[in-house]
Length: 247
Image (cartoon, rainbow, N blue to C red; front, top):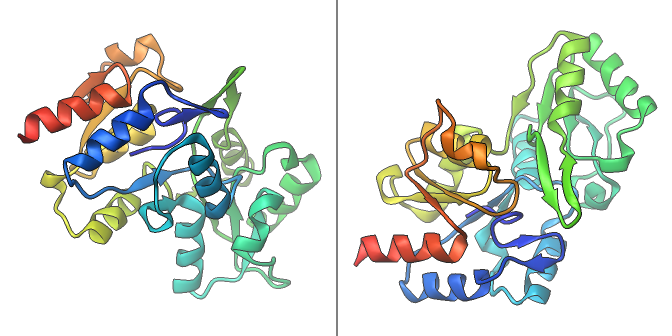
């Protein structure tokens, strides 16, 4: 299950989402929540969910930021981070002799100087590792530009191809399946992003349910390339469809 746009938008729970989650838990189906949000550490995400009324355990949440940190450690990389200050303590310090540029959603901290410093390292031959490549996200006052635009800018100017860790990366979905101990045929993804949630999941062999909340736009229902297994009005409706099919 995706978080932003599915369970909540801005600082408000999506109507019916709290009840929908309780309904889903009543079916005793194992859950994981996959988020590409990289401006907040997992502890802050958990605190926000609890404040909104969602009963979600920390170990049920997979973040693109933590998945990236794990990859950096596994590969013994020395990172130069361009990330939001709020996740700096979770990710760790920049290395003085970096071997990789790591990009998260820095928000207002995507300054020219910060981007140019990353660009110069890429021109020296360092690879580009990015937590996500989303186009936009839904906030309470409308759509907002996401980090994908800045990834594309660095790719274009430095002539490199970024490696994406979060959705729609197959490895990210497979990590969730491994954590749950289930096969692709036993899983379903609920999300509001046609490309990163639905297409990403379905490319990994997982059925995708698109909800008409968050960043969903009417034209998503008629995309000629990406065909969700189901389009539901909201999370609660998606849950009802899943439980109805499993009983």
